[in-house]
Amino acid sequence: GQVSAREIDTIARRLLDAAPRQLRVVVTHQPVHVPRLEERHNLLRNHRAAIRSWSAAGADLILGGHIHLPYVLPLTA
Image (cartoon, rainbow, N blue to C red):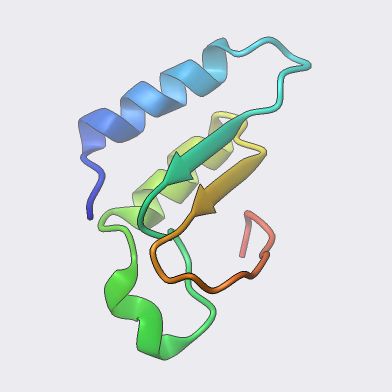
């Protein structure tokens, strides 16, 4: 899966429009980070740009699936 520059911008604008006390969560099917090298092929295409943009726009959580492997990492990782 991939996320386009237009989609990244659309989501960033929605994050910026959220009320200050709202929890800002982005959910993608493909993960934006994987804990194991053998899972790299499952990464969301354009994940680096998405992380930078959504983090700067105030995302509190970015949740991904696809690999069925539970893990938690800081957004800045």
